[in-house]
Image (cartoon, rainbow, N blue to C red; front, side, top):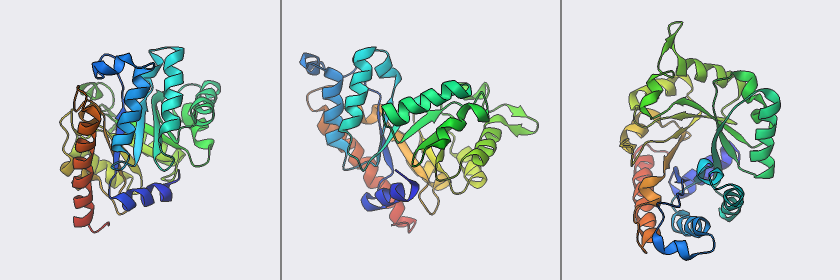
Length: 272
């Protein structure tokens, strides 16, 4: 999915919600454990319940890799079940020397054909360049994350510049706004505003709204641009809205509420 297609999808439903499928066998409703593939059954019902309210799904690969071969198969089957008009993100946080990154890119763009993948920039430009050689695929660079540990490295000053700012400056020159996004946490909205000034035309993938306490209103005030420029990820607050038989219904209610709030914000801003 390219940038213009993503913007069109957002405007057509008035939502820039991304649903995170961080599906944990220990947290899904107990009655699903009777299913042949409990995680797949859970994911399918979540997708069916939320697909009218979101434009993207983010699969956190760790929850599937932890299950070994069966987890990889479940990830593939989940990806295949997602409607084709939704952006699909592999939350894999890959990044390594060139030859290895070539294989990672092939794994997540060809073998398991996601539209986008999250990337760790610590090893530098050459470690991520293979991901930007694909047409209509996205690299989503970790910049300023929402966890407390972001203070350990990302927020440290190096040569009069925060490290996360240097990462954004560097990779905005490697990729373009057509194939590059940045992860910016919702729990740091004022910094998000500064980042928006640095890269006015780029999309941000924003975790931290919902279970982590980030404010959707604040994120939009600081982060929206004329092309929307935001994907707001919500995982636990949607997929675990209920632990009972009504989990899919409650997921629909939660995602609809977020989507409706997004639509109102876009209307007020004159974007739709």
